[in-house]
Image (cartoon, rainbow, N blue to C red; front, top):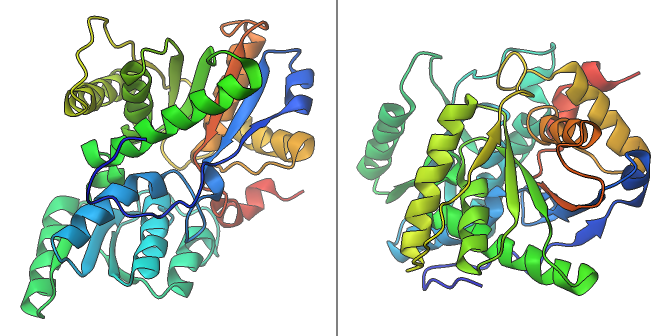
Length: 331
């Protein structure tokens, strides 16, 4: 694993890499595996916990006692930060605004919003047109005035420190896959929002000279904007690792499964959530992983991913949001 002095231990073991036999059979190949990053850490689990190992470590090394993050009321990043902060004895503050249209009467009292409330997070609401960066700066100043030492978390935990968590994950995946298949996976599929997860995976694979295609299904930005964000962070992370590569980093992104926008589930997404629950007892979410898995299934059916290949789907978490969208899934 990539080491850094300020890294704290929020994950006790490598997350499981599980074969999905019924989904594989349903789609007539390829062999599909799932990397269970949905079950790591405190606060409900998810990919952000990997990112926070070094980010919170950096905060602690600077003697910070308060962590400030921006998000919406159902932010996985915020919810897992609150859980990690509670575990480490730090105070979490979440600067929130309504990035997702209200889905039902209980929307803001369910899912991640409910879990953050139970964990007693301080939630500061701002207007939809207010600037997150400025708002977090003002919150940090107020913390200082009260004698605290704040640390502002980058959006989605997607900076070099956060991406290094998925350099770790790339190594985990390839080690586990070699044990099962005696080769590297042909494809790794992931949800891409703020870009740090896909960038870390790409940097980790490049760091080990492993040729595996990483497909990021965007749930936030357009394909071109997503590609730009991921490529820039990948290059910065590779440079941080002191890795000199003569090969061009290939960033594959797709926004075709985004639908009407962030946080608005598509029909395909909802069908996919029910399919994975029925076939594998695996819970995806309406905002992130449901859309990415819908993309993967479409790629397989259209033979963009051939039936004789091996695929790892990174489950980045978010299943608490199922409850916030209950009326769209209950039947």
